[in-house]
Length: 194
Image (tube, rainbow, N blue to C red; front, top):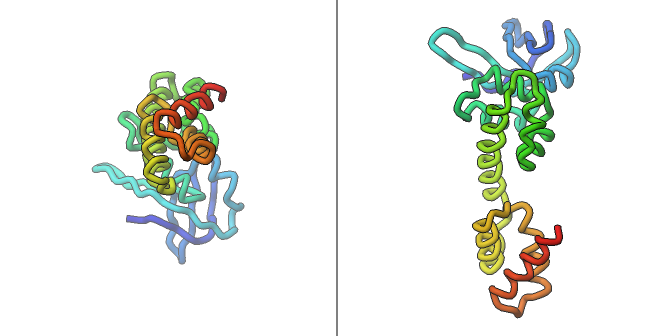
């Protein structure tokens, strides 16, 4: 499987780039975001690659950053989203814009991407949100036992980890001696003001 290419751009068009890697030309599909970030014909280029193999074809998809490739992989793991639709999504908005839209459940913004209907946009928003939150919770620094208990309780009430972590931290600083129930009430008061 090809995972990375470094070489010289032989030719690029919106959606496609051909790279010369020591005399071998590789053609990879690229999102518009990558197309605009890489250089011109004859200039050096590095791409992170996803190799898509089917019984009829072998296709390469190139990305300017690892994060872009990771997001692409998350997209194609959503039921009904193949590599072409995933590339359309990444061409329609930057990775930061997509993550922001997903975290805010902004289905209308995702549905503005050409070729993405409301049902597909809703599926992307819902399923990507789960995948992104799982990654965030794995990356989040391990909080104290009492902080984790508060965070867990608030998440069970429907809040997202990202929005409650700071509130829990501030509440514990101000109400360290108080019991769990009082701390939870203080967290809820703060979250109600946001």
